Image (cartoon, rainbow, N blue to C red; front, side, top):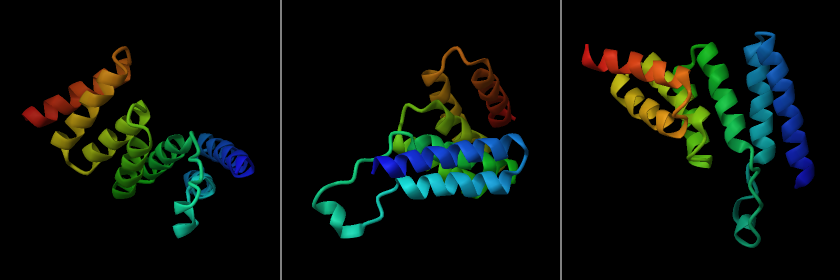
Length: 141
């Protein structure tokens, strides 16, 4: 189990390197590997003794969502950002990524809710406040 978590962290590190190099498809594949290594995939066996969840899984989903945004796969970004939020509700990047995907999909009202939650979680984040302002302007337009 801990071995899978270590492998997941290595896959995330690889993904981060690819992302910085602008190799978004390779980064996406690395984050997908991290998620795969972290998820419970043994079906009914998990009813007997629950497999511990990787405490970093929301980071992998949020990072993969960012890859999707960079590659303009906004629907996939929305799904991954939502999974990041479901994994850890107080993780600001999940809300940021989902709000960004909502905006790109032309859903400013939904994005507004996400950016408002983001600003509650990260009240001193200037970028979050700016996104909220941009979104409010679009909703009012």
